[in-house]
Image (cartoon, rainbow, N blue to C red; front, side, top):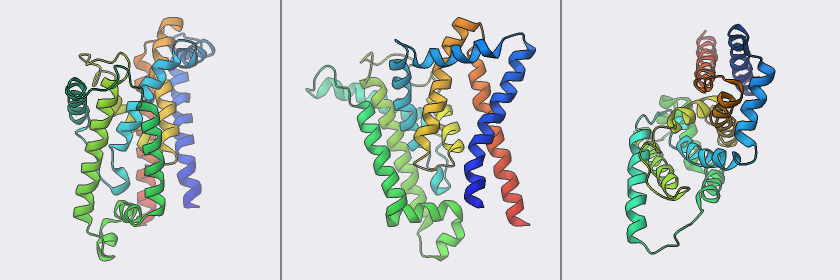
Length: 255
């Protein structure tokens, strides 16, 4: 029963957000049948897919940086992202590597697999999940929760820095002002992790979905005349709906 509720939350959140967005489009006089296909084309059409992948890689990296599985929230993502980008730019000047080294996507996919394995099949993963579900229960079970929380936050900071480095080391292969924080990788990653309930196997899917939404919003603006900020509203609605579900479940659990 619990698994069924957990699995239904992302579906309801996405469906509810899209329904409300559709109502807004109709009210302002925009045909959803024109707006939504334009959004998809803006993300996956020829010439646009590479931008979607370029946004997917750091966003997934930032999703690792939110140690919600241990009941912790990393609120310093933007600063850690920038620090990692600066470090990567400095390292590129000192280390004799090829001028173009496309390692972002393979590296993030590898880390996603390691994260999934560690979460479900190691003692550390069990302790992290136990701490996230019930901190006091984990403490009574012998888990050093304070130490584990510090490790989770430190690991989150490391992943955020890695994501910043991947942005700088990827196209256009230079440190561009505003490229680290302006796209809103942190906010998108927060929405993706909440939507996936921090489950490692689901996070890449929700990150891909929200990345398509974010990048495709620019195409929707060009073709349908809908402001790209509408996609941020959709992300916000998803977070609100997920939060409402979590609150209701929490209250029912205490009754």
